[in-house]
Image 1: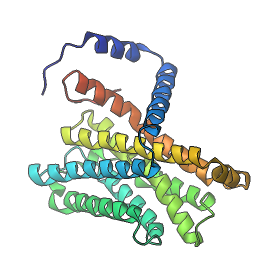
Image 2: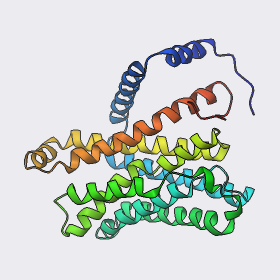
Image 3: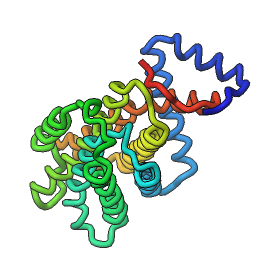
Image 4: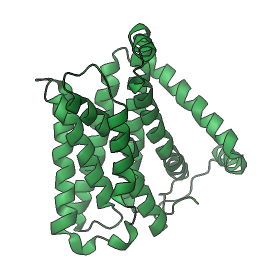
Length: 272
């Protein structure tokens, strides 16, 4: 619970945005995203730092969930399907990452995978009595099957094994929409539990940094990427679109979360 702060200018801005058309909101959101990425480009020179920031923030979100699970002894408000899909996407990427011995990517993905598996174990076994299955209704097949088909059809051609190519693409596509069961859960519940809000917001920030990582790398290596596209390899375009999709999936939630925070409140209800 928090007290509402006096911020008339911010309230006027949010009210104008609320009444604006969806097209205006999308355009403003896209412009803000581009502006933020350009600003980051001139303050952080190594694109790898964007990736590291993304994974660290994602891990921090998982740590928040673990703290909730083991301190409050409840998993209410959480979708176990999102956690399982996230674990599957991490496993799929690690299938390729393991070829890169000593890589920071392996370490970051492995740590996130272990933490995610701990959350799944707690929800499925230790705290299963508090898991509300009736609200976690989005079928996994609606998320997993399209990603699997897309990965078989479109995947990178620069990895040695075809299986590794498909696995890598599958993990990338799957991660882009892994949050859908959690958002569907929140819509069914019509409320946002505090720690769940922290977690989903962390995912949104994480995806922004990962999208910036992909975009800046594409900007800094245009010859390589455009050459691959000219040769019929549309994987890079689709991978970039995947990152953009999840960024926009979470953008609406993050907008309302920040609005509530600025007003000195916690986001209690999902926006309709």
